[in-house]
Image (cartoon, rainbow, N blue to C red; front, side, top):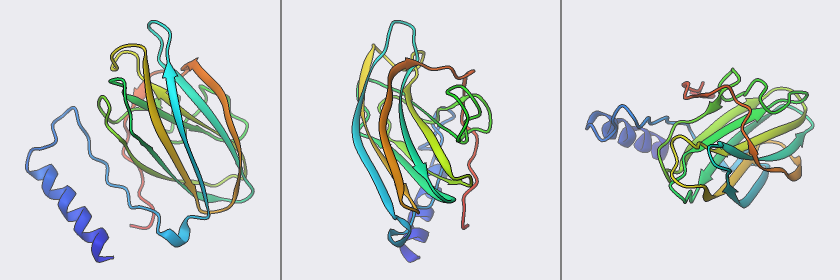
Length: 183
């Protein structure tokens, strides 16, 4: 608990010091405690987008009961700006993104910035789609790489990468504040 308080205090001081400008947003999300991490997905991914296309890779997993999920996208390269989306069971790509509450992709960082940890509660059992994309308008060039880590509070079935470098069907981008569970 003391470590979490120290980290939150440090980030608050960084924000007050002016180290964060209007283009960079700091979203503080508590980490899942080690005893809450029941399952883990970890993989390296890459984008090779077509000209003018915000493309995404899609991974799918199934949970059998409600779960807390933590996303971590790191080691981003290629002057890439990360887009993320989680679609609930029954929703297609371009449907309502659970990270924004709309049909937009979540975009909250600059080029090559590690995507902040996202902690979200998934209340419906079933098969979810997780999209990790690259914003064409904010990134440079065509290609980039990333490492994806997904932690869930309940065991899950991982179905792997089901889509590679498909054009994003999102209606735009947004960076809404997230509800922080347990605070």
